[in-house]
Length: 92
Image (cartoon, rainbow, N blue to C red):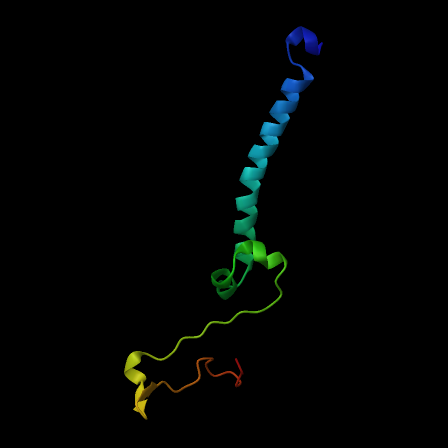
């Protein structure tokens, strides 16, 4: 029956490959959006969604005080304070 309609195995195989490629191109970014929606905002900034499958480290970001808070000591400008907020002291 395939010979009577002109649809050979090769043409059907080509269509199946094309559909598979289209589905893969559509699914990969959708998976990225899903994974990113489940991650913390600091993790999204620090690394891509594809790294979330292998990385188990936790990232944290902090901000320094503004330039107006600096003090000159011994010819050097120094910023003092805790960039980690009110939490326990940590080492970098």
